[in-house]
Length: 132
Image 1 (cartoon, one colour):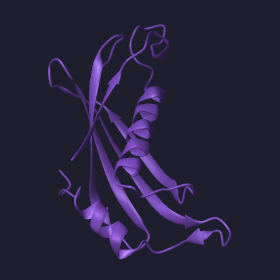
Image 2 (cartoon, rainbow, N blue to C red; image 1 turned 135 degrees about the vertical axis):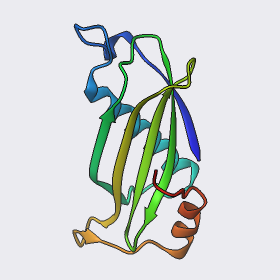
Image 3 (cartoon, rainbow, N blue to C red; image 1 turned 30 degrees about the vertical axis):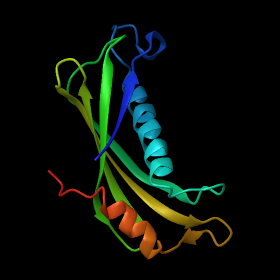
Image 4 (cartoon, rainbow, N blue to C red; image 1 turned 120 degrees about the vertical axis):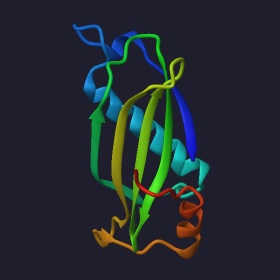
């Protein structure tokens, strides 16, 4: 499982004092980008697009909390994979949000999906877990 830490900044909170729901998608994006780089799935050319994303908000999160984001692959297809991202409050270990994204390898010249290489699939499979 891939893991990063995110520290909640004051500017990410709203008038109610908790993290605005849009910021969870930013946290997921940050974790995805680090996931791509750590697995060496992208080089100078960015060849993946986000086809779908969702997030279930489970608990409120506040300024100055630290989140741990666990990212793991739940499905690998021909040209796409599903990435689940569980977000936990570091101090308590409580699950605060759960995200799921569908990511597609894409040929921007041809404007269509393209099959992932066996090496990409092998790299992704090392982070694969069964969906909960």
